[in-house]
Length: 522
Image (cartoon, rainbow, N blue to C red):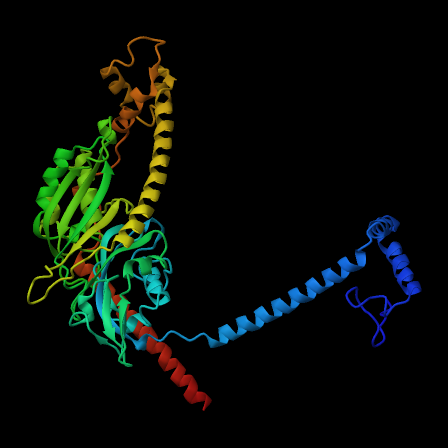
């Protein structure tokens, strides 16, 4: 391939080509070259279009001038943008006063690996919260913010009233004098206050609406709805007086009355080591349950009693690891008839049952940390935070939760419609017994008791059969008292200490080998 370098001063593109620097013969030569490259049809069409227009020269010049003006404008904008970037000042938190606040918020935990941040688990609620605090320029480093959390929730668990406390930036300039109130703590989020600047000028300043400010930087599933001033030594964990958990479930065939009898046995101060996951770092397994109620959800009334929504409400100051889910699972065993309410007292009797029987925990998704309770703000010695709700934050949070609820309600209605249609299907009862005998051995007996096998050839609706399947299944579950048990708390601690000693010994051997190798080489 031959590369032709243009001579100096000669046109090299269409913009620089004109009748002053090219002869008619050269222009014709360019047209012939174009014809050979793109074809005669394109060139002929261009000739016809230009020759029938008398002002083609003017149009060409105008287009060229417009292009030059556009290039000049873009160049000017690029220069201005670069200057703005260079002149942009870095935000300095030290120019503002700090204040201690308690933040109350909710989150839907289904897509998170728990609340507390962990190095090996990036998808935690706390990590997103801390990132939002930094991105909103409310804190610099979480380690310097005197941060405390009220409670930890596990993977999949949600919260409505989770609380954290920390020191955050306010809108009060550090060099200004506050003229409204004695302290910035007296100013509520979103309120206006008067200051005197270092120059002597007096002006009105609006305090940060922390809830709205944070929600702009948080995922939709995490929403702050209240921020309150609190004393500088306030701890969201140690100043919490009580916590309430809610666990939602469908009634199905559960005996709610028997479950409530068993739940009443859990109230009071007990050793709950058989109702939790053993943590070897825990020294005391005694906890006090102040109340345990099973409540019908009146806002979700169902025509079919089996589809009625209920919830457990557990109220206490502190809980062990997975304690609520373990307690609820035992209540489910009681409600389904697999255990009697007296099993609760047996499991609470540590002398009689020193080792926890092996059983699964209740699912994580229906569990909610509903609220955290603190001392009254009017208490003299250690007042609690006075949570205040800004209308703007409530408007945003309510609208977003409503949108999520409407979407999931529509999905629930669609699924209910599908189920209703399935339940109307007609089936042969004899065929049902024959095909499902291995799955539900007692099905034939139950169907006879309900007169569903009376006439041969008569069809029945699936709606009449499906409730019997869970009652007719083979029950392979052993009573808790006869199940295998795990290690006792003391055994778990001894094993943990042995593992720790082995690790330390292995590390010491590695260090000695390295020192020996170093001495030999030197």
